[in-house]
Image 1 (cartoon, rainbow, N blue to C red):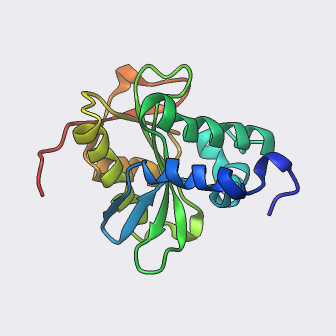
Image 2 (cartoon, rainbow, N blue to C red; image 1 turned 30 degrees about the vertical axis):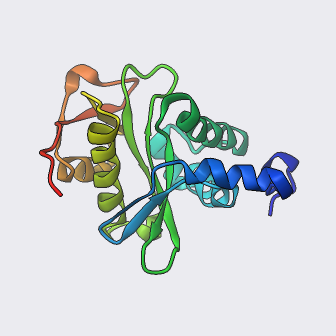
Length: 190
């Protein structure tokens, strides 16, 4: 629980409204993970990732204030753009393991697929399963024609993940020191 009033859980009718809104967001189960709407109780994990050493991969580590702004922007994407941040849970026990996002950040020329996972959850397949589900959502549910991941050139794990998800290097789309990996629209399969 946060000592910041703006990060406190809502109660009463406000809590009911939050649940109704979140119930309307896509929920996807795939590969042992569930992508679900983000709630305030997910924020501490998000903050720990982006304000800690792993934040270097997204231009940080971020300050707690900037982390909160990023969280709000990615969650607001659902209302304003129809895409945003998902919390990723293990399907077997509901444990939060990270985040995946499809979003248009200010200044980005196109929609991006991003991953935020703590170090202890690397190498377990969570990011791949979540990334595959989010990528497919962007192409098939949102009918996007393009999708890219901008990756820190020193983040070898993120580069391998993008490549496993079918992305290829696209130097023409590099952005502010990040290198671009472009996703081709996958074949539809059930």
